Image 1 (tube, rainbow, N blue to C red):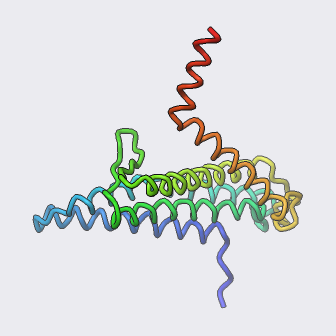
Image 2 (cartoon, rainbow, N blue to C red; image 1 turned 45 degrees about the horizontal axis):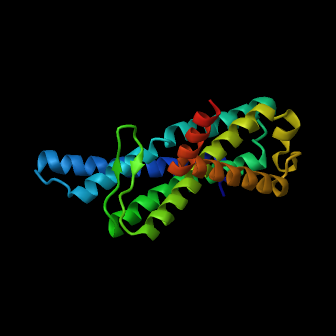
Image 3 (cartoon, rainbow, N blue to C red; image 1 turned 90 degrees about the horizontal axis):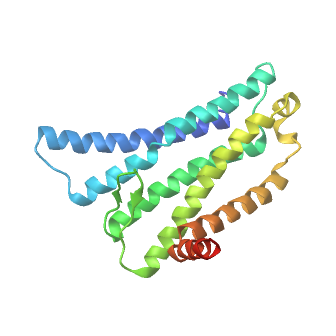
Length: 213
């Protein structure tokens, strides 16, 4: 049987499927509009545009994954791999992208279609309050997981040694220690992001700054 694929190859293939899948849908809708004069409904057009803005992360993530892999091979004479927890972070980034894509598709069926603002951020317009809470929680968690995974991969390349590259499963920061550390970092980022995104928190900070001045 053929040898198993490396985690970097698996995650890159997954990102490629997501990326090209979204762009194929966008191409089909554009082709139908230009050739057959069939314009996609507003929901489909807005959903496809929101999906496109999310998969824009995929090319750079793939480059980062292969950069980590090549760095490990360079240190180990083409025989090693990144740390085990760095490979977990790669899968975590793919899961975060998939969660955001799934959230957009779910909202297309049950809520008003999401739209993309001038900065390229996906904006969700929902009336039921409980839906706003659920989407906000999922959105912040996905973003924190994505950026946290990217930071973890970059840090792994900076601290990677030849011994760790040759034995990625036996690195000093094992998976049992890394998972609680990453969870604590992600939780702190969620709390900070929630505070910074709260209008009341920003207003209170401005008030304190004015009083202090």
